Length: 253
Image (cartoon, rainbow, N blue to C red; front, side, top):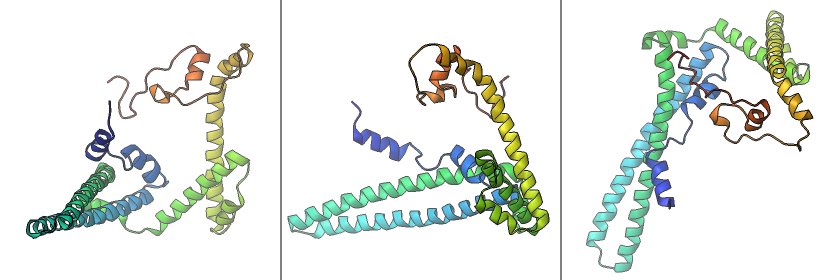
């Protein structure tokens, strides 16, 4: 039977339970729509984690000193109750030190994800430093693209640009307003067309389910990781999609 102690040991020693590399890539770095802003975000994330890591290491060293101090006090103390209390304090300090080490491991895992992105996109520190310099034109392009994307989400979901985004766009230069709205219309139109094509591909299977005389069934996400098809869709369509392949691997490999 699996025990809580075994799970605690597994999580603390072998499992990375901070942000995953995929999470960082898609939802931290790619939350920005231009490469200049992506780099800016990555540099901020690296600096913050690297600084925190130094502090965590100091915390671990403090715990080691505290443990040595308690051990020395125990050796010269005669009162059994005082000794027992110090032994409990000693155990607590060891637990705390283990938790700090877990935090360091988590920080290292996240830091590695950001550093992998930097080293993949920049050949040297000098090129990265040059790219990180503030550029007014790049910042202008970022806000045009970002407001265009936000406008597109509004257009797709509600059919019009929401008051918050249209108010922000109205604060921009007239030329940039046009650029942002143009991007918004482009993205919303292309997104709508892409989704419509997916819907058209699914429609025969959904129509079959509607007319097969079976009781109403609702989809779940059970076993979704097998091939990124819902199990109910597999049942309705009568076939299963091939196993999901890594996006970093070609089909011929």
